[in-house]
Structures are given as C-alpha cells and as structure tokens.
Image (cartoon, rainbow, N blue to C red):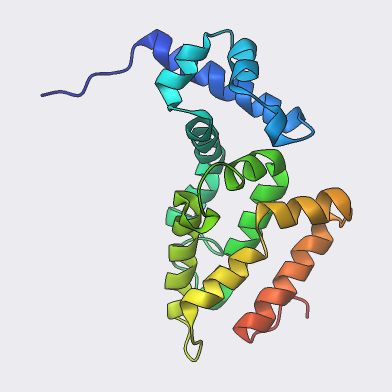
Length: 197
C-alpha cells in the first residue's frame, strides 16, 4: 500500500503557517505573546488548519524548531569537522555546545517558546533527550571522564534558552563573549584548554 502524498494546498498551507510563525516569533517581545490565532491570521488560514496540521501550539513550535534546526542536525550527523561524526570527542563536544548556543542566540524566542511550553519537565522533552543522548555518547568516549550522564546535563544547562535569553537580553553579554565563556567552561569540564587559551 503506497503512502498518500499530502495535497498541494496542505503542503502550501503548512509552509505558509511555518513562515508566519517564524516571523511572529522572531519579532515578538515574548514568545507567550504569539497565539495560534495570530499565526493563523498571518498565514491566511483558518485556526482549524493549524490544529489539523500540528495538533496544538507545542506541535507547531516543535515543527518550526525542527525545520530551523535541520542544517545543524545535518552538520552533526554527516558534516565535516568540527561538528561531524569523524571529529574526536574532545573537539566535537565544545563544537556541539557552540553550535547549540549560536542556534539559540539566532532563534531566542522560538527556543524559549519550545523549552517553556507545556511539558511537565523540560528534561523529558524530545529535543532535550536527543541533545543529551548525543552529548552523553560523545562524553563516554573520553578516557578518564566519569559520570557522563550528569556531565551532559551540566553542559546542556549552560545553553538553556532561558539562560541564553537572560545573558543576551538582560545582561547584554555580547555573542562572542558568550561563546568564549562557554568554550572556557567546556574546557574546564573536559580538562582541556580552549583554542587560544
């Protein structure tokens, strides 16, 4: 039995909704300000279309987040060093953290909306479990490093969307300073020296 292809208008509507949501989250003062009604109006579709396509607001945010994250995921899964799978873990872990930080800086409100949405625990969210598993697996390959599961949680805490928003939006820490602080922190945890250090 062949899988049914989505209708052209459904594909077009989905693209319009994701584009509208992307614009609204980029321009908003707070992710909580963006409603399903706002997104439907901006996309020129009915609210029912949103719920049929994405289930709920969290599903829509997750779909948009995944679409924006795809280039990073591709670089991690099959790209060249320093993110790609052929990179030794001591270089790949800091590169992964830097990529996550840069992604969240570029998508601050979207990341905040996803991490602050609905789930009883942010640590049970699918996106968090994926990052933790990837980081944990890399850390397991580093000789002498113990408690890889906890270390992965501690490193990911440094790139949580609410912390990134606080540092960038409230303390006005420049992007390159944040990247430098994160590289130094990762180096201390891993027992290495950051580039240029």
